[in-house]
Amino acid sequence: MLIEIKRDKPGAVTVDVLAVPLWQGEAVGTRGAAAQLDARLEGLVSDYIESGDFKGTLNSTALLRTRGKIAAPRVLLVGLGEKSQPRELEHLRQASASAATTTRKLGAASLAVLPPAVSATDSELAQAVTEGALLGLYTLKKYKTADDEDSQNALEQLTLLAISASTQKELQRGAERGQVIADAVSLARDLGNSPGNDINPSYLAATAQTLAETTSLDCRLLDPAEMEELNMGCLLGVAQGSAQPPAFIILEHTPQGASGAPIVLVGKGLTFDSGGISIKPAGGMEDMKMDMSGGAAVLGTMQALARLNYPRHVVGLVPASENLPSGTAVKPGDILRAMSGKTVEVINTDAEGRLILADALAYAVEKYKPACIIDLATLTGAVVVALGSQATGMMGTDDDMMTRLREAGERCAERVWQLPLFDEYSKQIKSDFADIKNTGGREAGSIIGGAFLKEFVGGTPWVHLDIAGMAWTREGKPYVPKGSTGWGIRLLVETLESMPTLAAKSGARSRAKTKAS
Ligand code: BES
Ligand code: MN
Ligand code: ZN
Image (cartoon, rainbow, N blue to C red; front, top):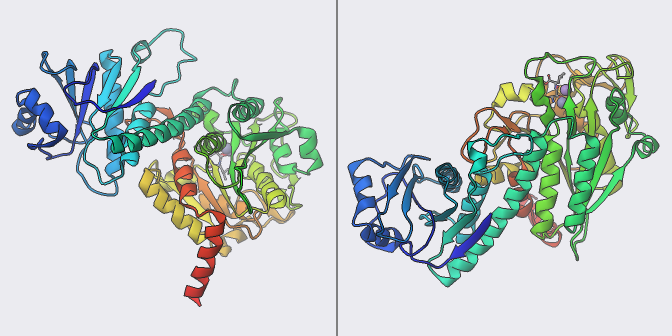
């Protein structure tokens, strides 16, 4: 899609649909672009508002024919809901998606948006509009041979109206960022929505290689022989029941001049989770093609960081495997040896995510001595019970990072909520036969997943995000269509951008220390 920022009066812009986002209770007033537009339309917009026919509730729309009074044949009023921080940009993102999908339904090809009043910079505003529109229009067409309604129509052009040269430049910057983010999220959604017979570990590896060819990222892959060499017994153990070989993806973003220890992102790349010998019930098992969503989020985030020229050294790791039952599959009672040397008794082969992550975390710690690690994984059904589809479960060893993640999540509307990781929980994973076991009974299921992972991070500041409730949606919302959500990329980019560059960071640390002492 073509995205452009134009310094046009709303009455002069030649597009199929001109969208006017309005807050609940907002009048068009007597000045400004909306008022000008209303005057050109002889009071049509204010009449809709004053009559109560358009109330501005979030994502409500009213379509007006303009009958030659302005260049655009249609004006679309779009409700932004109640104007209150910190959700203003989120409402704009949703309203923009509503405008874009409504326009597509009309069969119209071009849409212009009149920027509303928001408590944000022009760049943030443009990013929200662009993200909302592009992510709302997302579809995966590859697997349908007959066109449905939405895929017959295509919105080809999105225009953001600027009022001055300075806003134009800032809007441009935000729109470019929005495009980068939307591309990354769409990549992750494609991977999550595509079936397991296409998206296997080798496919994820090939995707990472393509990313390296098309960006400044470096990609390295470990093959099973190298995993053997590194003693990655847990990843190999999970993969041994499948005909598909496992993969271990290493993507590296090394900007010029970056110094110091890297930030490592780890994503669970389980391309299909049947449960293995501890097989899952049949109902809904098809959704388990999305069990690589953490890995997809890491791939997407790495692509976005490269395109945004993020200033710090970042490594993305994705252990990838299938989890299938067979004569060669790992069995309950089997004991695996992780790369760190710890032995793990497999109680339930369906608790496989923590096994493949164990080797990735150990690899991160040993090879990179990272400044910090953030992992994303569709790890437990229990987190869906605890938090539903409104927040990701967060656990970790570093309060500063968790605060950053929580605040970034509020800003970009990808929320996280902390669960405790008290030392006492680790008692639940003591094994009679090995160092630890991979499940710990029915209590505190998500926390036990976290407690298990904690065994492999040593003293590295680390946060675990259990995204099982967020990676997939059966309902959808305006900019998140049904299916794979691409959750976590917007959160990670927002969080990493809030982290100080290294020189500043050591300064901030010593300041914090002086304060505390
Ligand atoms: N991939 C699943 C978790 C999951 C559940 C993701 C629902 C998305 C939606 C994971 O591998 C799993 O099977 N976890 C088990 C752990 C249990 C055996 C300790 C679970 O949650 O039942
Ligand atoms: Mn499982
Ligand atoms: Zn799984």
